[in-house]
Image (cartoon, rainbow, N blue to C red; front, side, top):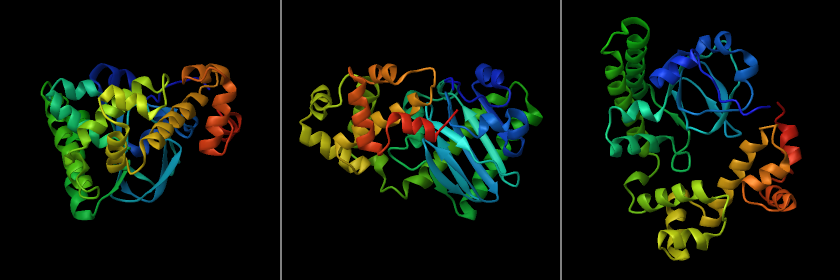
Length: 291
């Protein structure tokens, strides 16, 4: 299976405007079940809003049950797949960071994007009817601007509505997570996470990341434990395993090539590392998720 990013309805439109919204019911006829129901990588941010019926959706190989009032947040570069149900109703809202950058300042964009950080908050949020009603009105306002009005003012209004929508969701989600975003450790954690994203293929040692941050290993462990509820080494390993899983779904890459990409000079070391953390060999994982 090639590394084809998930293409939404009228993907050229998403590339041009950096934004699109799709009625959930139209997805199968627009994209085809073969694309939707296999794991695929996205190169944009996506929000799934469920307005009717129950079902499940997979994000980074983990299934999340949904029902009316569920919102699922999918971060750029994550893998996801649909379990199609013709009775499910809702919306898929897709946007690129550039869409917000052209309107919001850097701090506001950073704050908005943190809502998609699955290591800080769960991708799934279940809202009560009174809260979801306000969110539904915002989604309908966005849909109307895209599909009905669509004039020279529409995308300015859509950016405003999207910012309000994300901020509202983030405010409601924060109540479940002890206000992590206000924690004294959050800025340090995000710095660590950014460095890890760049250097995970170079080193997997806590000491190396602590040194880059100017921390002791004890301080880095304290920061990661407070935010992610796990030791720094476990967090590093979890990140590397997710990277490997995504690469394994690129069937044009050999296990040896993947090993080199993630910093293992000997493919045997990748084999041992992956099995230790997943109980599967790389080959067994590929068989579990065929193209």
